Length: 292
Image (cartoon, rainbow, N blue to C red; front, side, top):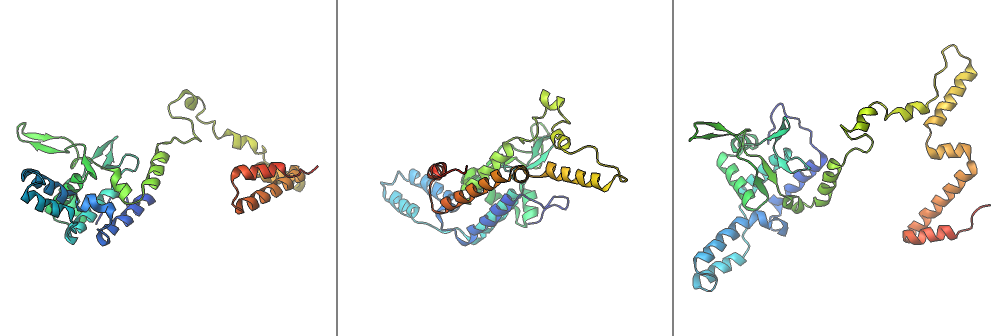
């Protein structure tokens, strides 16, 4: 697979993990998680033939039903084409929406079959068969037709190089990444809690104020270069106290309380190592004698 020269080769780690797991299909096609991809077309074809033969009760229907019950391995060339096409599609997959396209101007530009063939090194016919197999297995769906020539109107209609496609979550489940993918989707959809919501009145009124607490906590102003050594040391101590963590600040202001908190944390770790539940740990800590 070769990406365009102007394409960014960097991808999220989750995409790289999915591509790595996808290559397992070539070596272990007999695993049940791949049945929709390896047996889906064959099962659909045999089911149609059984219906045309008058059902499984007829002689021809029984023979076809026997073939349907048997597992047949997909050709290695077919698996190679499916993996090559899916690897390229995953490179252009949007994690939150599973959309396979190139973002452009607030919309999407789909990938055409000739473009996919040129980037994967496969022939156009093999790419089309692979896309058809993915569509019949319900692992890939089209959401548009892309840019095509309308013979009746005698002009091109649509946008993009090809149809905008969308992967099914069944593929993610077959790869064993459903938990990681769902977490990445929730993380992408969750707004950043550190910043105000864009466009809200509070965000417009406090646009430059959300960093103010950090700057206000620092001692101002810094002593001049010609100040005495004692004033410079006092300023350095104030800076260390302002930038210190709450635990370090407590150790300086109240050493006894700091030691008590450390002892409680050590006791909590010991109880957790014994396999106790959080409720039991909390009860034992509360029942322990408190220092005067």
